[in-house]
Length: 306
Image (cartoon, rainbow, N blue to C red; front, side, top):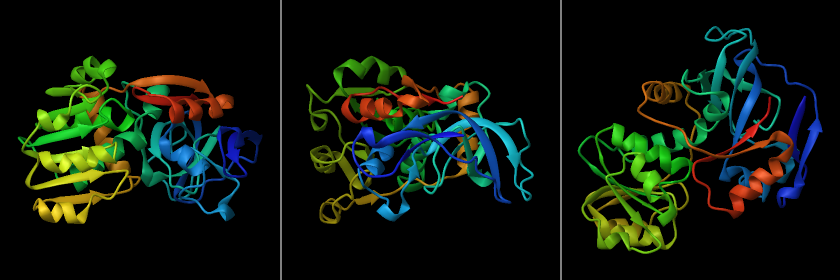
């Protein structure tokens, strides 16, 4: 099979299209013929030398995928060859490839409403948003949430999940994305380039921070007593949390087939839509990562594999 791998850390040019043996699924794995994979910030962070030790190289990048089951391990009974599936991969395997052996428990049926390109955009970004606002943020109906970076891959899911759960949604984004974020269901959209969110927002139960830095620091002022800042990028200050009688949480996304199935049900019910920014062929994975790393992207960047 063909795959895109790195043999050394560095810029996009270290990505190489190679031929390697097709993996054999272990007893609790499924072998999936990959139709599409998504490109995420974690991919270029790994490529640049983050998260992974050098002795793990060579490494195939890509954390999520959509495709069709080719074969099943001996202990797998939830899937059969020909099933359309999507999933989030464990860090020891990659989706920038024509085939991937995935843990069956980390996969679920592809949403019927989505083609493979759109389905591949879902797992990592949607699970990140789901786990951030619900598992760590404890968001419930009637609460107020502020989402920073609302037009991006994770942010556009977070807005929709929060709204579907009955929350009042405040969101920050660039001016060019205001109409898009409003169309996702946000109650109040703030152009961060021309307006300070703290001049408009107050008494927030949950700040979901996808920006970090000064944006996170300023967010303490809008948080209500007992509220929480949840971030995928930076550990919120314990000192600031204590001063505000609030909480902070930093987390890493975990594969979860059951949560992905629940997200798929929302998609099939029409409550959540998926936004794709650009699509690249597998051989142009370097260009895809460059586009994500260097530019402002609405929604997700996708690699078309099959």
